Image (cartoon, rainbow, N blue to C red; front, side):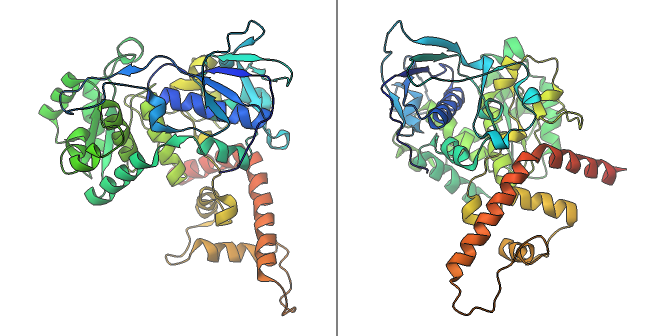
Length: 422
């Protein structure tokens, strides 16, 4: 994680979105990015505790804050409202933030009529309406900002148990069917389509996650699926009970993290829970099929950003209703020399690498091509660490330039796939 120590006496109160687990995580990710870009300490304001009741989890914690499940960067404090009338109130969903001006590409299409957020150091602010996907909020994201965003994560204990379960149960596909809360008003689930989607991914065992008992009973009567809670509270019950918090919310969290290891995943439209799984799978795989129940993902080469295709949806809705391929974080680019994401782009364009060829070998071939100035090998006293550092700097520069041209590369890939499909 990149260290940051904001030093400003003026405050920014930041109202963390009061919704569910992923809504709050998304809200905190944006807070961390704002703190980093403006070098300001941010005071996170959380709503009341969440009450949980579960008959299947004995002795579970009844009341809690979602923040207890999240690692929050030190630049963000959790306190009380400063209650000062001098604070300037801002509807954050009507804004966007620029990180690195040199990496900004087509700001008009990025912003879709939102205003740029500028925070003056000698003023106090109160940021409201913070349910936002960072992919649509931060223009020209640098590698450093991506690391800051990535530092907002669920606590390692919950990640580890999900990884343990995933390794032991083997390959699987999964489906998330949201049936309560918003879904009945905004996007009612078509159960017949759910059954079709299960058939489409039934080449592997299918894990089912749903918050609606009636939906669960209906699906189990029609299809062979495995309810995710039966896995966690079955063979892995002891591990789950040893977690710092073992209740209905942490059960949902472990299930969420487990499903990010799916080979194929089908989500519920406009569910941030499903969106998070899509985002993590996109991060792991580089290319991802953003499949939701009864929803066709739009792609149009005439638009530089994914969200530009959805003209019938308001910008405020786009900020949280969907997650986007642009959410891909450039994590570990310096460490691994080349992003696996862009390596996959290159192999798709120029052909697949040899079965046993490593990323380092491909990197070496890139370094020794005409596109790179390779240091001379004549000097036997040449410090290999300096050579590696020089290559890292060069590759970081190249990868940064690719970020600027990401929209163009993405459209090129779409055209290639269309040509292949003819």
